[in-house]
Amino acid sequence: MGIKNMDNELDKRIDNILFSLSKSKFRSSFHLKEKDIKYIDEKGLDKIREHAYDFINKRLAGDFIINDGKQTPMKGHPVFIAQHATATCCRGCLYKWHKIKQGKTLTNYEIDYIVAVIMKWIQNEYIKE
Image 1 (cartoon, rainbow, N blue to C red):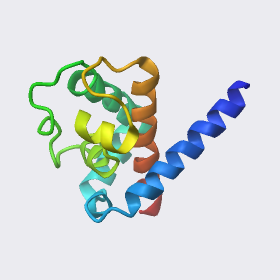
Image 2 (cartoon, rainbow, N blue to C red):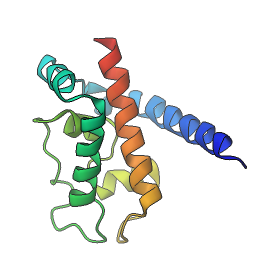
Image 3 (spheres, helix red, strand yellow):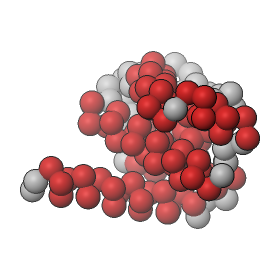
Image 4 (cartoon, rainbow, N blue to C red):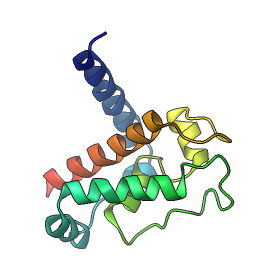
């Protein structure tokens, strides 16, 4: 399978999970607010992606998270909002929705996937504005 096919498969997987999440009353209740849009306007999507990588590496990537389920704030940054909307906010949600096992360090592929899901959701919300 070529790289292009892998990218297409990843895009389909992300679209499918975002569609499933949109059917959840809780997950679909999250939306970017005006201040989040302004923040993205100021920083740019590349910087937001950097922040997403930073947050995932610091808060989710380890094999054991002491405060799992409480490590992602509900507001304060567009990535935090996206994490709750996409069920990438804690290792429990990552397992339930994305089948990423708990109790092990995330691989680079898993981190890239999580950030791709977050950024696709942010881009979809950002474009709506």
